[in-house]
Length: 260
Image (cartoon, rainbow, N blue to C red; front, side, top):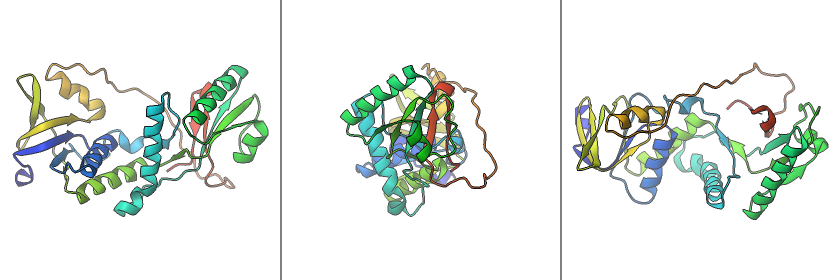
């Protein structure tokens, strides 16, 4: 492994999840290819592998919405570009309201979505049943349908981003943990690994929940911690249609989707 680690690079990225690989991919796309990504184990092994993989488009601001729209467009062509399937599909999403106040909130969001240039439909219980026939309509007031929302396989999408980065010259080294970020004169100048130091003009910390510990060692506080959550995976359900929209029920803090 020692011979694989250069002494210096323009950018070093710590973390091989979808964030780190997306940064590497986009740096390479704009011509910054002297990049080394270091992953302590294997790509996606941290929290990316069990991410939901939901690809929504509506965000709280126009800029964030434009970024989300770009993400959908990127994922739609990433498999063809890299030869690595992503599992991305735009099967839409339905957000369901169980009381009038929530429905009013969803309708305001739909109005904002139209202003941002998104396709959106405000729908009633009958239309919800047409698009998602297994929904129990008891208590359902209405909902909002965004046809360009979708889902992707987080592992395959990360591998496609990594492949796209490698195709442009980025070096990705797995099974090589970063032990410490090197700091000189108040700025990060590289990293220390078990096989030596790597100096860099820019250090990108994309280690997810592990970022906290690397930052703490150099006196930086990152308010990150693990948060327990739950999900249920069922056996195959006979007669369940494929390509159903993602179903969001904010009043129950829940969503349902086909397993990627």
